[in-house]
Length: 237
Ligand SMILES: Nc1nc2c(c(=O)[nH]1)N[C@H]1C(S)=C(S)[C@@H](COP(=O)(O)O)O[C@H]1N2
Ligand SMILES: [Mo]
Figure 1: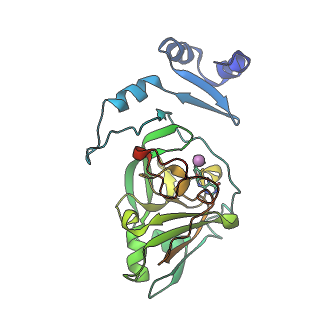
Figure 2: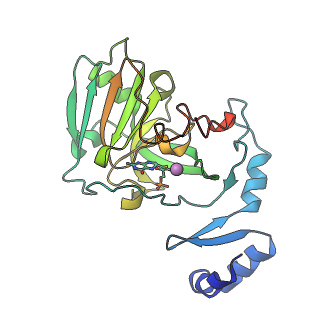
């Protein structure tokens, strides 16, 4: 650990907790004004587990941290009052929703793991939102739609195959661990596509567009993999 950060860490963590973690070989880093614990214990535990679909719980090359690390981006308007979500493209009934109308669609809560391409994973976070499947049904998505483009503020986009976006843990989410999303994590609403690298989960979501053709997004056109399967380590294109 970087010793220059040590006094800072003491201030933020109870001394006893700090010593316990240090003794157990946990790596603690202070980054971007926050404190992030890379837990060797949780990483080891996760490595011993497998998922219901048979894949290992932890994709290769990942380490577990305890909470999301805000990874930046150009934030949108965080206010729920101003929120509008446009669902459009290859659909019979394009529509726009405000926050109350989104809530009224019937939220679901899911536990999901997320995996950032930079090497951290957060396990079992509790997300509340509306499934993409419900939004696609409401819009009358056409059978010709093959891709979903998650449109974030300031032109950020991420492309996901429709086939992979209809799972019941792919959603448009506004709560994380029983709290409203914080602005750095995409408030008021973000996409969540847990089984692809986390850049596919557009923050500050403004639109969902269904398309026939593929439209590689912000990171996909900057050297990252078009598909982004963490278990295949599809990091770079
Ligand atoms: N609109 C928008 N969404 C975005 C990004 C971004 O820059 N802008 N970054 C992506 C990347 S690279 C990651 S790893 C995750 C990080 O989410 P977090 O900041 O909540 O941890 O958001 C993704 N969604
Ligand atoms: Mo990322």
